[in-house]
Amino acid sequence: MAWMAWTWPTAIFFIVIASLLITFTILAIKFPETPRVGILRIETTRGDRLFITLLGSAFINLAWLGLVGANQPYALIVCLIYAAAVFRWV
Image: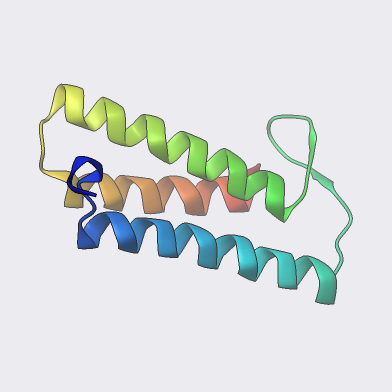
């Protein structure tokens, strides 16, 4: 399994994503919601906003690597601000 280069940060990343998906599934079952229209003018649910957040965060991290370099903790701060904005206004 040396070709996979699994590290603790990689494992934590996948654990966090799996935990988010499980949490949002439980929330959708226990507290169903009606879609809302935000600044994108499309109906979105919590799951849609999570997907938009994860996709946007991936692009933020790729841009950060290309423009700034490997100082990723600051990219995480940008991603958290982006996530808060998506869940608030999208």
